[in-house]
Structure formats: C-alpha cells, structure tokens
Image (cartoon, rainbow, N blue to C red):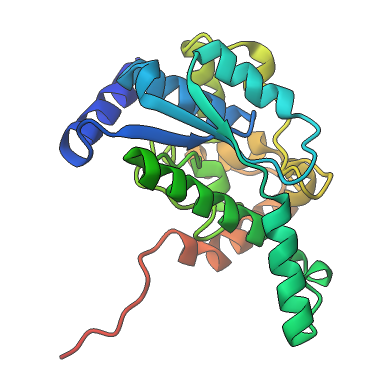
Length: 241
C-alpha cells in the first residue's frame, strides 16, 4: 500500500537525517496536515510527533485541529500568531507609512511565514525536524507561500495530488469529515477552489492525464503553473567561472 511506502520513507529520513529527533508539524485541521500527522505517528510513534496549532486570532474551525490531536494522541502546543502579525503590521505602517492591510499577497503570505518561523522555533527547542504538508496539486499552481507553508525539512506528500491524499487518508482509517473537509486558507473566507477558479478534481485529472475538457480552466492552470515554478526550484545563483 502507498501508506506503507511513505511510512518506510519517513523512517529512513529520520534514520539518516535526524535520529532521535521529533517530527514537528503544523496542525490546521485540514486534510493535508491530518493525513501527514497520521503518517508521522505510524512511522515514528505518537511520542515522537509534536503538533503545533497556529491560529491567527480566532480560528472558526480550530476544533478540527483538536480532533486530530486527540485522535492521534500526540503532544501539542497552541501558539496564537495574531499579536505577532498585528505588531509587525503596526511597525511597518508607523515607520514607513505603508498599510499592509491594503495588499492581498502581504495579508496572505506574511501569516504563513510567521507560522513557519514558529514551527522552526519549536523545532529548535525540542530537537526536531519540520514536516512540510504540501501536496502536488497546490504546488502545481503555486497555491502555497514561499518560505511559509511551502518550507520544511522533509515532505511526505508533495508528489501526491489532493485526490491521492484523500485516498491515503482513507487508507489510514481517518474519519471522513477530516478527509473531505473543504480546503480553505482560513483568512480569505473563501474555499481554495473558489479562489483558484477550478476544482481539485479538474486539476488532478489534468496533472495525471494531461486531459482537461474545460479550456478556460486549462489555460488558467497552465498560466499559474508557469508563473509559480520559481517556488519549486532551487534559488538561482550566480556560478563563478
């Protein structure tokens, strides 16, 4: 089974890159982090997995995150990043006269990068490795934040589409309401699919088969893939001759 292969891969990663370390993972309550956390518990044991809840102010669906924590029986920390985001915004506005709340990409990406900073902070304190929870579908169209949720030390699912991640969750025996939870960023008030303008089903079929009957969706997917490739590549560097 696919889960067995990934569990073996995680075990090998820690054997070679972090023997005795904890796995540190952000728990959003969404499908990806839920499935990833379940894989980590299977591979490393619940005593070696630490879940970090990272609400920004009031998170309307944080109960899903606690359901995952309780279901898997893992240690957890809840760190609210709301005051950190506000402090940064206020400092930028007071010093430079810029209003961060007027720029959508700033409002979306900055909290994601602060969350990753917290994950690496916890990792440093406990002696850990940060788990990346991205999937291929989101990466393909750049639906992730560079140095934010796109970061991490190891990535168990970044070669799996959203459809395949959901199938993996069923294989692991996770409750259907966690596997089928509507993906959202928790900040815009819209679902991922509403923001993208096409369904994950359409995207995943196109990724795996090259077939997309909806020409408008195909054109948008191709455009997003092209302009976001930089997120998947190593940083360009000047090479001394």
